[in-house]
Length: 176
Image (tube, rainbow, N blue to C red):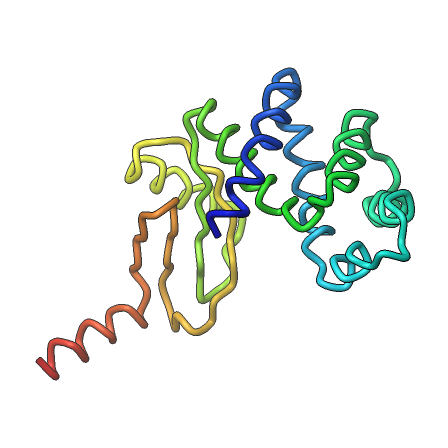
């Protein structure tokens, strides 16, 4: 949604500029806050006019473990006071994009029909980095509907070597 991206951009850029010293640490707490803020019940509570910003802050920081760094708490207070809690997941996504751009890396999601062990994931990661020509932050998602193989999504690029994709190609060829 373009509107969310427009609202989130200044927050993400300001956070990125202020966190240049510890981008990895900041990315960790921003991602955890974004996961918490994505909860529909929390969004409903935050939108209730009878609930104060302080109560919402206490709830979110409590769920986050209460061990937020001072700058994280200040950031969260600012987001809540400005009524932008629902935008926090988009802020986190844009922050990650800025962090990746600086490091020359990209996020990659590997959808696999079967679980991948550490050695297989390391080998796959190295192969994918060669294939895509950049450093990748690889995460794995289980997708049994693929039947076998993997599907890799890096930004807007997709590499699909799954059995499901091959069967779809064969079906299209046979019906054409």
